[in-house]
Image (cartoon, rainbow, N blue to C red; front, side):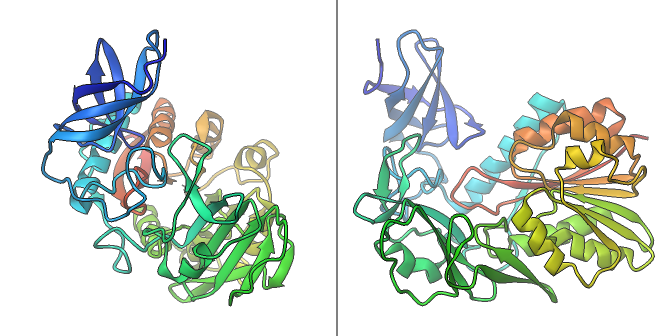
Length: 414
């Protein structure tokens, strides 16, 4: 028998990974959104049956609020509405404290590492104080009538959203326009260029002032197929929907953290795994100099093509167009590295890649992670091979959401 639609009173427990808190009701765990630890709420069950071991629910009424709760600035946020944000009801300081607790819990539970984690904000820039206006890449879904919106939480239903308050204001006219397409990704670069990637175009596209308009397969529909990003004194070409950090200050924040943790030295041999369009590779090459080497590994063909353009003037960089696992397995990488930098996708590097890394005996490994659970699992694998977490920094580069970016330094245990 379904319990969906039932209202229950709950005392809310700790924050959990995924944007919800944990409560208990009738002997079961309930994952509750739109609440804070310590609150008492009326929750509406959104998923689960009488036989389910756990339920999902939304807090629809707060009976006992706690410090840190605020009125959501976005009119589209709340139970049953847009699923893009998790913490519109939480002030920024409390969001960062909760994110730190999540990272600490994942490290403890999955890697046996006890560490208090403080989450830092990004470098100064738009959105760093109120958590709004920071996102430079947003993929909208179109309704049958062409209105752009975002999906409701754990649903395929599209809620028209205009404006999206966490989106860069420079894409406001894109989100306010009707598009004859299934999906529309709006991109605003650090140099002020604007690109739209449209998927499954069904008719005539609007004539907005854009740097480029691109099809989902990379086809040029109008203007350029790429934007230019700038970090420090370097520029990077990023084609279409290619990967680039979405917060305005994320690339510089993470670059500085990686270089500070990794301490690359002149003449060293470095691997940059999951290198994308070459952000870390470029600056690692500057640090190791002409006598050093950087092996830049990326499997996505569009990103690898961009990397060739972005790194063409750095002869100490060797580009390897393969997955990290295949590059190791096929012997395309060095037998020994001084430093390995990796920025894997959300699933993490996983055990096989970690074993390949430790086989090259690097003195330092710098791991950039967008998922603390995946990071913790990989840290446990590193520990099995004699490597330990030396330092960890966490950054709030996705305000209003449960996502958090970590930069971990892993070194051979003494």
